[in-house]
Length: 201
Image (cartoon, rainbow, N blue to C red; front, top):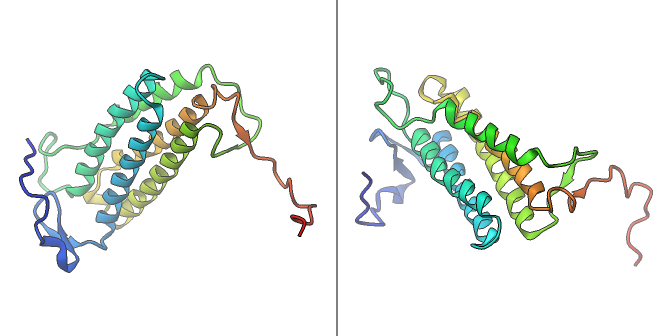
């Protein structure tokens, strides 16, 4: 059980922080950047949940609340390097089944959507815009974890990367759902302004 009795510790005032295994690293480390980006993604999901409200689209709201909790699992996983003698169940680790559950969710939300004929611009409804912001932050977190896997492959759980990859796909689909199931999607028009002389002065 997590117990937080004091908010500030002054431990990080000189630019270092403590990982889940008790070791100390610089706040500029790739690992801290990775779980920090996951924290940002979670905050962005919170904005999306607020945009949904309490009356509309309760299934999406419930799913995103579940994912927020799972992102804390991802952060806890990344915060604690895998030890040489670690056995399954010793630490909280992301499992492949969690990414597969996201795939099931993607299929469910994507089923009623029309096939896209172009890329979607981030926008449309306010909720769709929030979901796209969350998607791009998840993508950045994914890139940070990919870098961590290059730097510390034996000490990092690859399932965390897979989870973030699936989550970004889900958020793209949810952005379309939030645009009247894709009917209000704003589509990219490639090269639409190439022949334009720009705005009149």
